[in-house]
Image (spheres, helix red, strand yellow):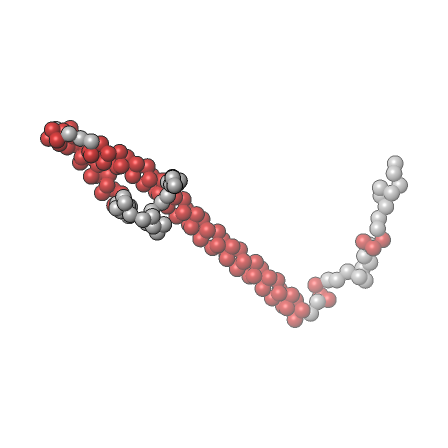
Length: 146
């Protein structure tokens, strides 16, 4: 057996004279002690509520950002489809314009354009105009030959 195993630190031993009972504390001291504890708990509660409110605001902002980003991605994909429709219409022959199937495709293209307009996507004329970063997105840079 190890003799140090059961060794007791003398500083941990209290005598009856050193122990404090509830009778030794004055009512004023007890009230002030309880008031301090209530103030501390109230402070912890207010901090927890503020932290929760910050968390709630942050998650709402993240959700709105996620929705906006996903909507932008979808709108760009639909813009590509609308552009392909427009390319097909520019290459159509006059006799195709009377075809009911072709007219149905034109209606679909118009419906897609209206759906984009509802989301705030508007067609801007950019062909032959100077690049304006407030309205245009650069997809590629083509170096000019000198």
